[in-house]
Image (tube, rainbow, N blue to C red; front, side, top):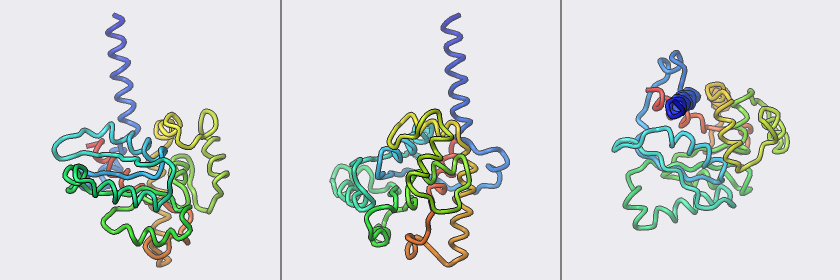
Length: 230
């Protein structure tokens, strides 16, 4: 009986875990599915890696789909991520394995000062960028973000939605945000901001410093959720 109850509990946990990362039926019917395929994501910090890992662990790996998340250094900035990704791909073994993968860079826009130059230099990569912090995207899981916020205010607001203070680079806190937040709400908020900037004639390739708050992480996460929901 004990083993039976344990299996039931595991099954229930899996169902709940999947449900949090699936689109609602109505949203799924309205969302265009694109083939994720095989991708590799280079991250600036642990928080980003833990967040993307959460989805990568749920998405089934097969000959058509594979999501690899790489953190080469936990103490860098946007330029460091780009440099690490380039160095990673230069390695013969890595190049052979990942040459056909879609390549993504995930970084913040708080450093270096000339962030626009990094964005423009990252040709060959899809960019998952947040201005000024990845935590802007995390905060959107709980509330609409429409105005520029300081780092301390972002952390304070995140903490108010969690059990205990938010801690950057904390696996448990990152997973708590996915498990208790509203990812569809975050997607809607981020998309609305991007559309607003587009209406003003702004894009990340020319105006990223003027686009705060901003995140386009939602584009990949929405496709992750479509993949999981399908």
